[in-house]
Length: 216
View 1 (spheres, rainbow, N blue to C red):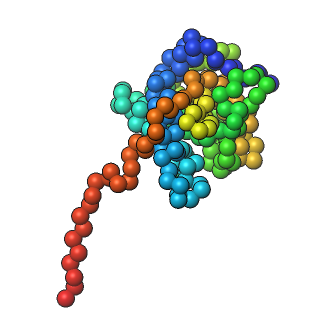
View 2: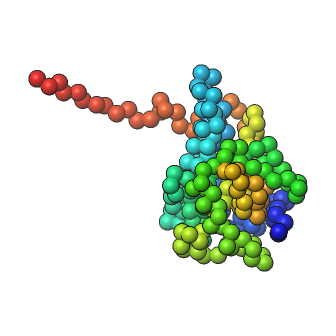
């Protein structure tokens, strides 16, 4: 079994991201925005709210950042309720997920996992990666067919006002949990210095006036 390729130093990280045509700044913005949304949950929210907000905001902001430019290359796709952002030219797809405490740990003997088990749909998406995982050198190739695209995970582990994160290519999933990675691109740690506020509160949404006409 091929050892996991780990990109850690800034030069190799940026080099691999350039091959994939993915902006490091977009990934960092997605993680920091997700962290702000998580921390902004009021204490009376359900206990599941911070985790859900982290996942929801991470996927939304990732899509927003990558679609900003060029607009025609990245497209949002919901593959049977799995939120993806797909580079239609390169055949690269990304989804955001919360990881365990080993996320961002470059130890070659460590394999971070997703915090929550994923359903069979994501397992099927990951299995699509397998036919193209064992090339001699990792590289991005144009793959216009949906069944041939490579799906990466932007994995992030929040703790306090910080988050460790990595963009990684999964290769094995067991009982709904990703347990083995083909590539791991270790990203800089995210640290929030100010009191977080959500990127968009529900109260900021446009007000909709509804006219009620009584039946006579």
